[in-house]
Length: 321
Length: 301
Image (tube, rainbow over all chains, first blue to last red; front, side, top):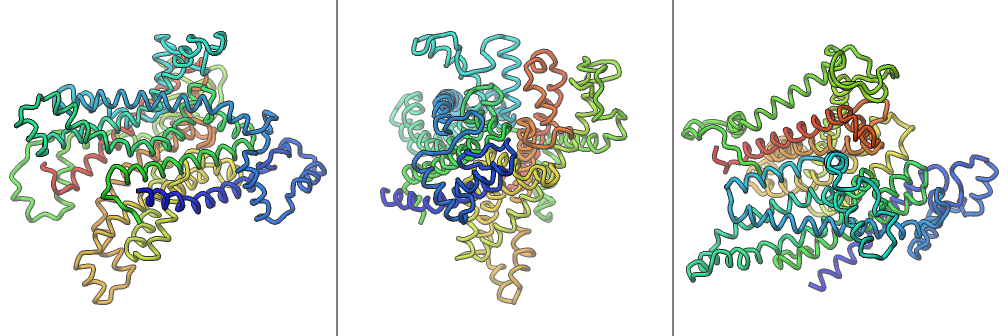
């Protein structure tokens, strides 16, 4: 297993290099200087641009420029934001906790909802309850997150007044108190549900089908024959077998959350990485944009890697060469 | 999944002499949900493409005096903040959304099938190179790269073509993987060996012998893709990075809901595109389910 993991990690290196090259070339294709942010894209004085280009080594050959950029990137120097006039790394660090909080809350809600619904539907298949859950799932899979988000704000924030429709926390509450965390939770709950809707639906579906399939297997019949109570069979024997494959979804969730966060954070004006990315695109803040692009690509790569490795851990029959 | 019980299973003796596609067609025609969905989708398509004959309202003209009118009277679904008729824009928007969705699906299926079938048929080095490339494309976070590429290419080429090209460029990986695995399984059959041994060219073996046998998978994939491409287009337009703002599309119309006063007080501006989008996606998904079921030889219906 360890050997497999190490091999996968080494296999990731060329992918990392390729992605960084693609991001670098995209950054070069953008107007202005999108790597260090020292040249202001809104200043069009040709003499200023020529001077800065010379100073920043823009007349060097491309491979040299790439090497300089990637070595400073690895050291955590992502350049300077042209909009906020501060290092991009500080900007990202400021927003990252919000996105992580959103992602984790979304995962927790996904797991709770999916387990409750999946176990219920799997235990009583083809009943009204199961069909109801199936219907909700179908909607969860079919409704795009931005439409779900817009409807959620319209119904729960505007008409019912249950949740706030913008921001990540009530700024009047002092930081660090219990109320502060409650306020954060209150702000994050709606975006988290919307973000997790797709994953919840697929988890529920998977759990239900797996429970139904497992309940027909021989070990369940043996347990029944020995007089084990039905609830124990379902909650211990079957559930244990059905949970394991679910673990592999975790890696894919990272990728889903990254793409989902851009949409969800924008709808709920939630100050996270996704929203920062979109504002950087609209305000021509290329250094921030490229840094986030590379960062999110790395996270997606790590997510896919985790999914692959967990797959191998869960199912020892899978040995990819 | 929603379990659909359509029609009672008739004795199967009639199907003995039927071709697989005829059996599939019969199964599909008996699936009520899929038929209702097809009917709905067809209606949406016809209405969208006949838009210029159905309404005579101008979709681009800004008219301040007709700003944000409530539904009723001359404007069936009211007007938006620039005084444009919502119903008219809905019809024209459907046209753009469907065309973008359809073109992306066609390009993705074409490219995915070509890459997948070549990789699957030749195997070996060709297969590993093509599949590593596919993995590479699949590793990009879709939304992030579509937005970045769109920003770079915007203004150089027509906005609509950029969008179609960029979405397709980043989405073909999944189709390539599925087609490859199907081809891998299919080429083990003896008739392929026979075709090769009598001297068929590889291109002929792929097109004439392999592809028809994986066609059902490709059709089902195309249906699912069509729905997700429409979602991708409208999500991007909603965020302001899709179809140019001057052209109405369902996503563009929905982006009006980002203004709090529209979202709160003028639901007639954003609700129609939202609802029609959801129903369209649902019906495409139902059609996809129906097709999958129809092509599945094990399903009893």
